[in-house]
Image (cartoon, rainbow, N blue to C red; front, side):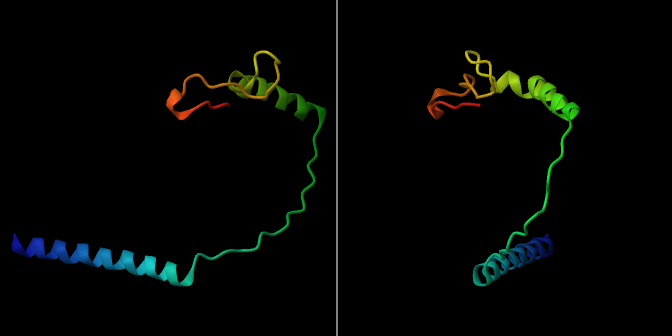
Length: 90
């Protein structure tokens, strides 16, 4: 029993040393950053794709994001959130 506990202790200490070593390495070398590359993209659309997008927006997005008074997708007050968190809009 003592051997198992001793082995578990060494494994735990080893894991702590590895984690602290990794965090130290990140702290010293810093998190790498990369320059974003420019993407050349020109979207194309057809009237059929626009109609399909409008249909999907009405089916999926409108129940939460449609303003009842103006009937456009502008967002509305979410009433399911506890007032402790303040007012939240979709």
